[in-house]
Image (cartoon, rainbow over all chains, first blue to last red; front, side):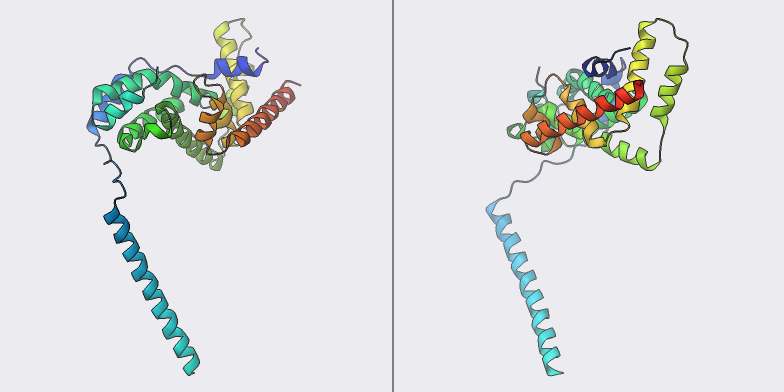
Length: 73
Length: 181
């Protein structure tokens, strides 16, 4: 029996079955690929920034109402 | 040979280029999964899923961020870790069973049997390591991966990969010595 780690790891790998490439290629042909990720354009950055600003304003509005309600009591 | 060009073609829907990627990289993936201590059937299932995910997500491959083999082994590693974590939860003891079976087998001086015993012995020792340590060791025995590629695969710095690898090797050596003794 091998005692060296190198020998043990050298014997540990499996061999692919003979028809593996054909089978995987056939399965891949039946499946659609995911679309490529869209690059972050200036227009998308502006839209994201506008959405974030709207969200922050809404949160600030809630906080202000909560503060006014708490002080009124 | 690196499969980067073929993977870029596969990302544009070229299935012949994808078949060339599978042909070129299948041994590497099966070797990696075997060195993680997975049995042949599980390795085949994970390898198949790895290549199908590679096909599906080929458009996400960026050659500027690393080689095709690193991208592919990252998918294989994540799938193998998912499998190992699920197996740990199910408290599978197949590796220990495999070791005891290998020990009980007739002691014929046969090379194939010896190889099987070595594989079972390693699998049983690897089963006592953390999944991340298993993948680190498996990657370190891939001839095409240098330390920076291994670090990229493991998502850590080169220095951290070096230290973790050294610790994992020591731990595995200790386990094997304890098993032998």
